[in-house]
Length: 124
Image (tube, rainbow, N blue to C red; front, side):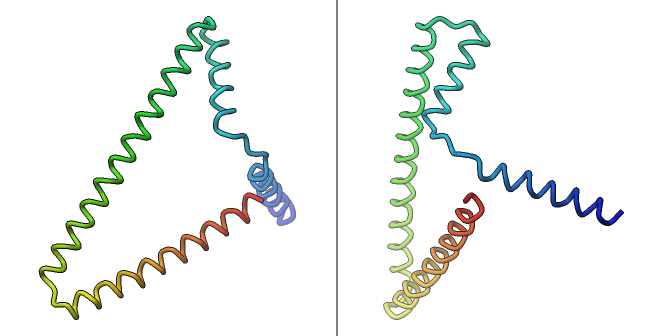
């Protein structure tokens, strides 16, 4: 019974491991495949496919612009927060605050790199 359970567990792990190592298709190829699938399922004309492609591209551009705007807004808010902190804290406290913030940022960056390398090791 134990052998059967272990065999099933290894088989399951093998399947998940194989699924992780499948070849990556790039994003544009997936979009093209999805458009072809929609064309077949909905019996779209070539003109409709072209219109859908244009719609998807314009929406993607809008999302990209919105993300850039949000990033600029976030950066502006961070600058305003820093200015407020500098008004409240003494120069020594502010300097220590900056040092602590830099340490935390370095820790976050290190953890991110660890996760990134661990994820890339799983995919390979």
